[in-house]
Structure formats: structure tokens, C-alpha cells
Amino acid sequence: MPTASSEKLSAQVASPAEWLKARRELLTREKELTHLRDEISRRRRELPWEKVEKPYVFDGPRGKESLADLFEGRSQLIIYHFMFGPDWKEGCPSCSFIADSFDGSVVHLAARDTTLIAVSRAPLPKIQAFKQRMGWGFKWVSSNATDFNFDYQVSASPEDKGKDKVYYNYDFTEFPSDERPGASVFYKDEKGNIFHTYSVYARGLDILLNTYNWLDMTAKGRDEEGLPHSMAWVRHHDRYGSAPLTTIGSEKKAASPTLDPMVKEFRQEVETTRRVLARVPADKLAWQPHPNSMTLGQLCNHIAMIPGRLSGMIAADGFDASQANFTPPQPASVEEIQKTFEQSVRDAEANLLGISDEAARSLWKLTMGSKELFSQPRVNVLRSILLNHWYHHRGQLSVYLRLLNVPVPSIYGPSRDENPFA
Image (cartoon, rainbow, N blue to C red; front, top):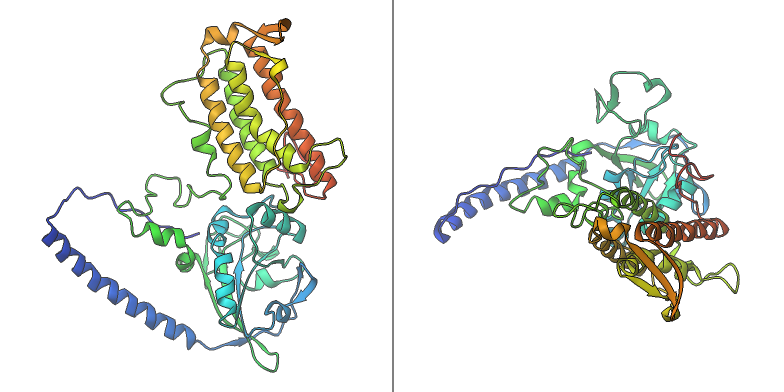
């Protein structure tokens, strides 16, 4: 994907007059770039076309679809070549970085006689599961049964295997992955003839990266110096919470020696739970497998709330079970569940890091009014009432997903739908 380095922050501070002078000088260069971009766009439109003769057929939401079908009655078609190989468990984070802006563009492009879709070699069920997880609405089809990706330079062909250099971006170059990013544009005339008018790859896709365009306006720019590679910071948008949420307070205060292994386990399980919750179908929150069962939404809310609520309860001296009167609320949306979960993780992290080593080993009591039900070291209670309870309901959620025909993610090993070791 595109690379760029950030400039170091300048310590120079100017007077208003000096700042205005420097800004006007830069404006002159910006206008030059704008005029050059207009010229490049004009020359792009003047490129010759090549007729598409091969009868490509894709797997789409309506079944088998030809290249002509993908135009959806319009004369222009833009295809984003999304990096998602047949054996990959999820789509490329950098392609997802670009695709996050697609839904806002689709309706406007349609008003200009242009259809925008994504194409990948991954099988359609994998594409649909990942698309649902990301919350996207744009059309995305599979080219797994065609030569389409090979013909447009975005997948390694069988002949490419083992070669030091492959043909990509109109030259022979090294590329570390079997899948490569790109975008291709097609035109269909009134007779139904289809023509390939343009394709762009590598840094040519920079213009699609809206976040980079915003960052390029800031003082720090892309701020990627010192990273293993330029886009090492990019995550799927449902995973940005992981680093800050699981390290809150850890720089100032470490977990007690007794609880340190448990806190590390908790942080790992946050990631796993986040992946499972990401599979929840937004239109099934009221579904329940049995009248005596929680709805899907209630179960997800329960899973989301357990870390914060129970860690807070256990951080106290004990709990009177006669005061327990809790029914998980029915959430209005998946987004509400995710927000509840992220706040719960924050609360749990603070609660766990606030327990001293002495408190971790001291006794915690569960009572029923004046009657003591049990008394155990707090660390044991954290294991049983917090973590084991949490894992139990997460396993219950995986059964709900299976009953709803939603692909179940790997948790501690391969599921029937996902094998991270393949």
C-alpha cells in the first residue's frame, strides 16, 4: 500500500506577517499542483481503451454475475481490487482503510452514471462475513472462479510462485504478498461492448486515502517515521480500541504480582471477545433460540458488561447476593453493544490495576443477607466469577452465531469457519 514519511515538527515560530508571507508562497505551489492534477486527469481521459473480450463471471449476492451485470445499468464501472485471498481469514487492513470511505461515495457516483464495487478472490461467504463485521454496504463480489485478478495484475498467478519479481504497476517488481491493491475502470457502450479505460496501483491509490489527505494538512503529517513500515499503524476500524483500552494506567501502575498473569490473560481475552462481538448480525438482536433464553442482544450486552461490573463488585470487600436484581438490557444497535464493551474494558482495567497484592490474596465474601455463602481469596473469585463466567457466556454467543448461520471465528483454535493456522 502507499508509503510516505512525515516531516519533523519545526520549532520556528513566526509573526502574523511572516506566517502570511510563507502561506502565500505555499499557496502558489499548491495551485501549481492543482493545475498539474487537472492536466493529469485530462490526459487520463485521453488514454486509448482496450476492449474486454474475456467473459468473466463473478459470485455476487444475486448469484453468478457477468462483468456487464456489475455495471448495474450504468455506463461506467469502478472496481477496487480488495486484497483478500482465498485462504485469508479477513480482508487487508490497508484496503479496509480505503474502503471505509466507499459507502459515502457510492450514491454520489451513481448520480454520475458510475457504479463502484469491490472485487476479491476470497469466496463470497468469507467476503460477506467480513463485510458484515465492518458494517459496510457497498457491493463486493468474488472473482475466485475467474482469471480476473491475474489479468489485472492484482493476484499472483501460478506462474508467479517462486519468482523474485512479478509484473505489477506496469513493471517487474518485488511484492511480498500474493494479493496486491489496485483500482480498474471500465466503460460499457450502448451496444454492450465493454472497454478497460484505466487501472492504477501502488502509490497511485494515495488519492483514495481520505485519512491521509486529512493528515497531510496537519503539522505532524502522516507521522510514520520509525515504524516497521509506513502503514504499520493502520488497523481494521473495529480494532483501534485495543491498544489504549488494554494499557490504561499500566504505564503509571503495574498489576500486583499476584494478579499480573490474570491481567495479561484478561487483555488477551479482550481481543478475542472483540472479534466474536464483531460477528453479531445487526438485524438479529431480538432473536432468541428458546423462550427461556436471553435474546441475542441481551446476551451480547451481558458479555459486554461483565468485565466492568464484576471486577468492580469483586474489588469491594464482598457482595450481598440478596441485592442482585439484574437483567441485561436489550440494546438498540450493535454500536451500542460495542460502546458498552469498550467502557466496560476501561473500567475493568482500572479495577484490576487498583487491587493491591495484599488485597488480591485477602478473603472476599459472598453473602445472602446475614448468611455467608462462601469466603475465598479475591484472586480465586476473579478467576471464577469474572473470567470463567465471561468465557462461559462468550461460548454461549458462539452457539447463537452457529444457529444463525453466522461464521464462527476461531477462539482458542480453528472453528469450522476459520482456521488461523492454515
